[in-house]
Each structure stands twice: as structure tokens, then as C-alpha cells.
Image 1 (cartoon, rainbow, N blue to C red):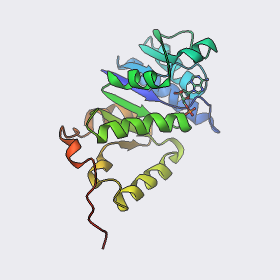
Image 2 (cartoon, rainbow, N blue to C red):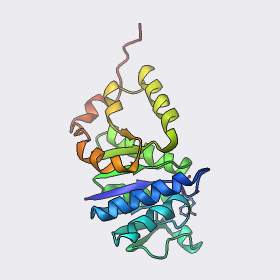
Image 3 (cartoon, rainbow, N blue to C red):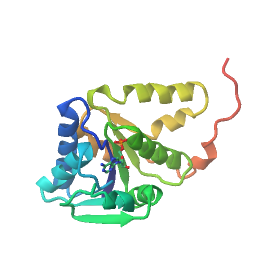
Image 4 (cartoon, helix red, strand yellow):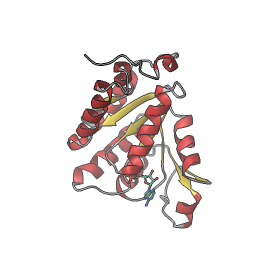
Length: 197
Ligand code: AMP
């Protein structure tokens, strides 16, 4: 199995963010799941990689050329792929992955997570999406997405595209239990014009 992980290039305000990133990496490595991520050495990204490497797991970094030039890549990865730009990086991270996992992060993490959800909604990618709600970080996002459903910009079925978990120990079971995403998802990609009462 291969998963891709999206997470912050910053440490966050609390030590638990780094700890959870390390712990997720350790669990994925111990489970012999190949981890693909953005290749960075700092913040949660670096902690994730260190966690995988701490148990001799396999971690592949995908880094845009300009970040490689800036020496932002983690030096100890199983493999580092340097690609032309951010778009190719995102595509490569997700394409061969059976699931993606989001840990707390900033706009880069949000962009990656929302692209995965968008592709899933359009029936262009079908994997599990697991969102780790460390310190309730993603609770406002969950509410915002529910608001989009309530306002009929998303279908109620789109709420099944991701699974919110509290801790990293729930991630691997959540991947295994994630509902199969319908092959005909495109049929309900857009929400009809029915008005709320
Ligand atoms: P964010 O969640 O905003 O910290 O973004 C995480 C994403 O930021 C990564 O996937 C990268 O695109 C990018 N990024 C920003 N700074 C770095 C860095 N120092 N090393 C690697 N990636 C970085």
C-alpha cells in the first residue's frame, strides 16, 4: 500500500503537532506502508519523515526543483524525486497512492487536501482521505464543509469523501474501513438546483 501525507512545513504552536507527525510516520513505517510526501526536512514534514525512518520504513519525498536548489529537502529519505514544479509534485504525490492523510498545516496543506477532495468528487481519484484532527485543528474546516453542504454547493454524499479521526492511531484502521467511493461519482458531482425550503 502507498499513502501520501500532507502536513505543515512549520512546527505549529504546540509540541503535540510534531509528536503526532512523528508518530504517524512511525506507524506507517512499522506497517510497511510506503509513505509519499512533499520531501521537506522542517516542521511536521520533517517529523513525519523522521518517524518513518526511525523504524526503517520507506519514505519517498517529491520536491520541486526550486526547493531542491534551496536545500529544503530531507537528507535521509529512502528516495527523493526532484520535479519541475509544484503542480507536478502534487500530481505525483497523489497519483499512485491508495489513500491520502492530512495532518494540521497551513495553506499548502489545505491546497493539497482540497485538490484530493476535488479530484475525488469528480471521479478522477478514488482513494481514502483521512484527516487527523489533532487538537481539534480541523473542526472549523469540518463545519465549513458542512456549511457548503447545507447551502447546496456540495451534496450530502460528498460528506463521505473524507474521514475525520482524533489521533494517528486511528489512521490505518480508518483507511481500511473507508467507504468505497462510487465509480459513477461524476453523476452527482454537481448539486441540482432544488432550493432549500
Ligand atoms: P504549509 O501547510 O503551508 O506549511 O505547506 C506545506 C507545503 O508547503 C508543502 O507541501 C510544500 O509545498 C510547502 N513548503 C513550504 N515550505 C517548505 C519547506 N521549507 N520545505 C518543504 N516544503 C515546504
